[in-house]
Image 1: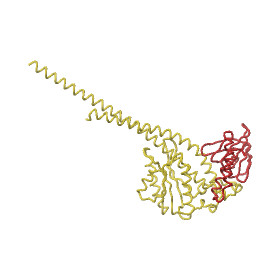
Image 2: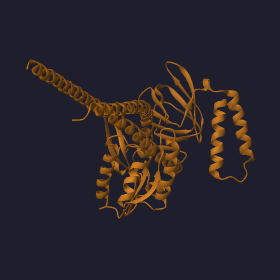
Image 3: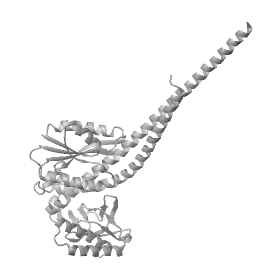
Image 4: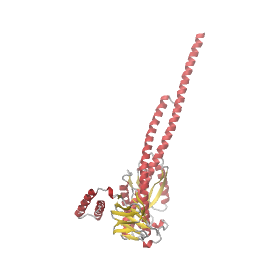
Length: 295
Length: 133
């Protein structure tokens, strides 16, 4: 049985851990609130942009712009994988990595060569050891610099696709559903083709007017659209990360409470046991003395 | 055909406006254009400039937009722009000064690439729109 001193030390250490986790939970909650507001504002913009682009793409031929080109052969797949830089967010990263592995296995049957690029340290740390071809790596992406990063990424990925180094570019990130639910999503970024969107804007398409002419518009909006999609993915991923961290820290705090309760109970029991033993000693002592005096 | 147009002005930060308007005038790259209900499907790239629209409740409205896209379809106009500003909140004197500075810079620009020139031209247009020129 541990001594009282040992138990008190343990309770103290659990308490201080709990305090840290409680603080982390509060920080995550504030960040989540901010990120969520930004994401909710960004979604209508990126959705509207997607509608416009798909509309234009549906009216275009794949020769009209390099980004609309549909490669004849699927050889090189480039996946941009969004994870977090830091841990302590529950199964956020491990779930992403697990899904990613399964995805790679599936795609290995289609593509000859798969390359991974990373936003976030955790994904890179894992896959740099596992021998999958790795490309670019970005870290320190947050809400304030997401625009800049997405522009840089969009330029790099677009160029790579244009020169034919990749035949397909996919974004893999956690889609934010709610504070307690995030869903991993694989989203094809390039080639942009309207073929998948079961001919939504088919009617009266021929009398669409473009200013300036269609080819110029495509050249202007497609690269921008790629950036918008990437920025959206960054926002989704960051918001999900904060949500996951908040939930994880909340669970950790309540676990700590449980541990503290158990330890306190043990402390009281131990203390009671010690008192009982001492009392028995005293009683035995006096008994012995009294017996001795009577003789 | 509906009597009214639905106008949506969307930026990455927020939905600036979503409501019915009677007409609007937007700064297209090929010149200003107006949209009335019943317009044919239309997609235009916008220059930075002033967007004017008329609503039943508040009459004439003006917004400064920093370029973007206008998509007209089924009597719905979606304006996608990086940023929009209320003209009443702009420091006109400062904007005018900016415009002059950009103009000088653009005049001095001799052997710069197209993208640099475009960027400066964009800044100049934004400054001019803010100054109300």
